[in-house]
Amino acid sequence: MSLNKRNNFFPLAIYNSLTDQDRFKWYGYGDVFAQPYEYKKIPPFQIKVNNNTSVTNAKLVKVSDDSETDITLELTTNQVTFSDQLPGGYYLLICDGVTLLDDGFVDWVGVDYGHYYLKFDHDATTYYTEVFNWCQDLSNKIKITYSHDDYLPLTDRLISYQNNYKNIFYIDSELGKPEYESEEDAEERDGYKFSYYKVSFKKYRFTFLAPEYITDAIRFIWLHDNIDLEFKGDSFPVDSILFDVEWLENGHLGKIESEFTSDTVAVMTGRAQGALDVFDLPDTPITENTPSGEYNDDYNNDYNNI
Image (cartoon, rainbow, N blue to C red; front, side):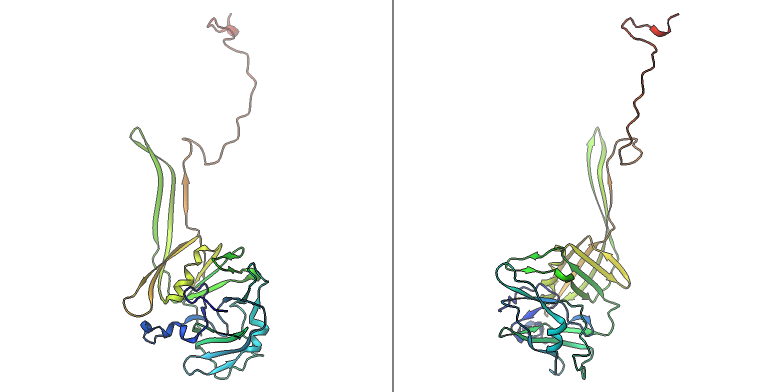
C-alpha cells in the first residue's frame, strides 16, 4: 500500500522508497539522524495495509556498510501482528517495539550497536523504515511512553492501542530548570479584590534537536490519554505536554522546546468567610424551643412575670 510520506504518526517512520529516508534530503547534507532505541528491539510502528498476509523477505540493514541480516522468521513469529479488519476494510500491521529479537531466530554475526533500518515485503510492496540507533546505554536519555484508552481516530485511519500497544520515544536531552506560573480569577468589590480561584503551575522543560519525521510524530503525543516520562530513574505521569519547533537556518534539524506538568498543579477555590475548610459542615441539630420570654405582642417578658 502506498504510504503518506508527508505525515508520520509513530516513533519509527515507514516509507515506500529508500530515498525517502531523512538522510537523503538535499538540505540534510548527508547527515544521519537516528532515533535512539534499545539494542535488538525494533521501534514501534503501524502500517495501514489491505490484508493480513505474512511479511516476507525481512532484512535488517546496517547503514555503515549496507550489510544485511535476515530476520524474516523472527519478524513473522514474534514481532509483527495484525489487527482485526477495521471500518473501511483495511488492517493494521503492528510492531510493538517491546519484543526482543530472539537469538534463536537471528544470526547476530556482525550485528552490533549502531545505525540500522528494516526493509521487508508485504502484499507485493517493499517497505523501508527510517534509520534507528541501537544504543548500549539509554540511561541518560528522556523516555516518553504514550498510549490511548481506545483507538485514536485520524482522518483516514485508526491507530490501535489494543493488546497493550504503546509508542516509545528516547530523546537525547535532560530536564532543565522548571518554570512557575500562576493564574487567578477575582473581582473587585468596594475597592477590595476578592479571589475565588487561584492555580499555581510548576512546568518542567527540555530541549532537543530532531528532523521532520520526529516532529511529525511528537505533535500527536498530547492527544493521548496516557503519557509517562522517565529520566534518570524518576518517573513523571504527565498531565499536559506541549512541543514547539524552530527550524535551524542550515540543515534538516529543528530545535524543539517542550514543557510539561506532572502532578504539580496547586488549586485554591473561594469559600465563605470563616469556614473551617472547603467542605460543607454538618447540619446543626434541631433543638426544641424552651418556653421563656415573650409569647404575644405586648412586649414584656411573659414567662418571667412575677
